Amino acid sequence: VNIIERGRNYGWPRVAGFCDGNYNGITIGGFAVVDEQANCATLNAKEPLRSIFPVINPPTTGDFMTWPTMAPSGTDFYGSNAIPGWQNSLLIATLKSGKIIRYKLSNDGQSIISDTINYFKGLGRYRDVAVSADGLKIYVACDSIGNTSGPTGNVLTTPPNPGSILEFTYQSGGSTRAINQLLTESKVDR
Ligand SMILES: [Ca+2]
Image (cartoon, rainbow, N blue to C red; front, side):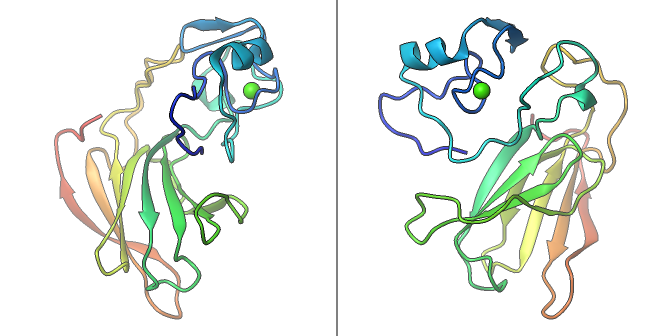
């Protein structure tokens, strides 16, 4: 999670997360990261507010589930005051162990002031998240296939709710639950 600034570089695939060297010697996105700190300097890379979570000692082999990053995908901003405590939050969909992550932002939106808060956790691959105009419903687009674009592609397992939009409705005083599968398409745009 980062703040876009003109003229800065955001690193991938020469930098993963912070400029901490944790991917030195690892190939990511088809690019061999020899010296992450040097890449940061060369690129004028801007370090993130939060990194979701490339590990300190990433594995060089193995299937995608051994890679601890949550594989963030689509995001939306929650600006409503409909759900208590949620106003001014960033919502992020993740592809691996599907979940919606919420980060509470500072009033000026320049920093994250919460831990990584998880919702709707399941086995689906969540491609995108959107909020209804009244702030009471959260919509989640699910991937239609399990395949990935990285070196660990060719996952043949079909994820739950393939090609569907899930609707979650906030109920005051209760918990959020998936109550409707609104529509099923042959494929959600990737
Ligand atoms: Ca790093």
